Image (cartoon, rainbow, N blue to C red; front, side, top):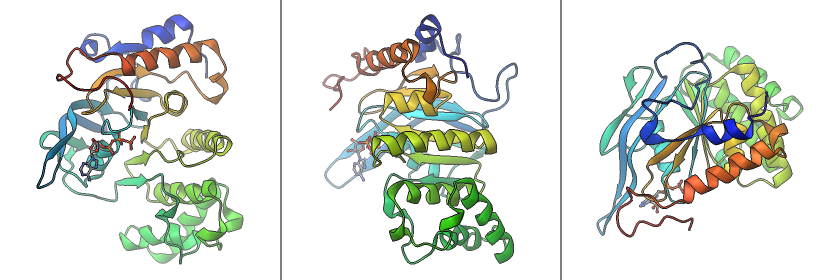
Length: 298
Ligand SMILES: Nc1ncnc2c1ncn2[C@@H]1O[C@H](COP(=O)(O)OP(=O)(O)OP(=O)(O)O)[C@@H](O)[C@H]1O
C-alpha cells in the first residue's frame, strides 16, 4: 500500500454534509464503478427504553458498506457504536430509518451476520477449538458433519491454530481465543463480519499482531467487515473507510478514506497528521448538537 501524502490525508476528512457532492471514502470495490451497497444504514435512530427513561443512542445515522469494504465505526465511548453493530446484527430495531443487507431489510439476527465481541469468554469452554468452529455450522444447518469439519479445519488453519484444534479455550491465550472467534465467524461465510472492539482487551503487542493477521486474512478471503473501535490508530490501520461518530447520541460527522494506510504507515508523518486531524474532527464542538450535548471525550 502507498502512503497518503499530508495533503491527501488532509483532504481525506470530508464533512458529512458534503458527501453527496464530494465522496471521499472509496469503497474497496467501487473504484471506477458504482455498485449497489451491500449494507445500507439509512437515517437510523436507536433508543433504549426503560420504565424510568429513554436513552437515544444514535441519531439519524447514514452509511453504506460495499462488498469487501473494511468499514470502521469510530467514536468516543457512549456514542452508540456497539448499539449500531447490534442493530445491524438484528438484535435491536431502529425507531426510525432502515438497515438493508443485500437488498433485504434487517429484521432479526441471521447467519449472514456474525459478530465477534471483545470478551474472551465468547467460546463455550466445554468445546474444543474444532468443536467451537463446527458448532454454528451444524446448528444453523449450513453444512453436514463432514463438510462442517472440513470447513472448520480450513479456517482454523487460516488463523494459524491447526496445532490447537483439540485444545480447550482455557488452554489458549486471549489472542488465540480471538483467533478462534474469528475462524468461527469466517467459517460461516457471512455476508458481513461484525467486530465490536475485538482487540481492545489485548496487550499492545498482541493487538498489533492481531490487526496484522486480520488484514492478511482479508487479503486472502476478501470478506466484508464492519469494525467498531474508539482507537483512531486502529481505525486507520484496519479500515479502508472510516465513519466518525459524534459524542452521544452518535451521528455521522464525516467519512474518511483510509485505504492507503497499514501497520507500516504508523510511524509516518502522513499517518500522524491523519490521526491528529481525526482527533480534532471527532472532538470539535458540533454546531448541530442539542444544547448540553458534550463535545469532548468522557
Ligand atoms: N442496555 C442498555 N440500556 C440503556 N442504555 C444503554 C444500554 N446499552 C447502552 N446504553 C446507552 O446507549 C448509549 C450508547 O451505548 P453504546 O454501548 O452503543 O456506546 P459505544 O459507543 O459502543 O460505547 P463504548 O465504546 O464505551 O463501548 C450510551 O449512552 C449507553 O449508556
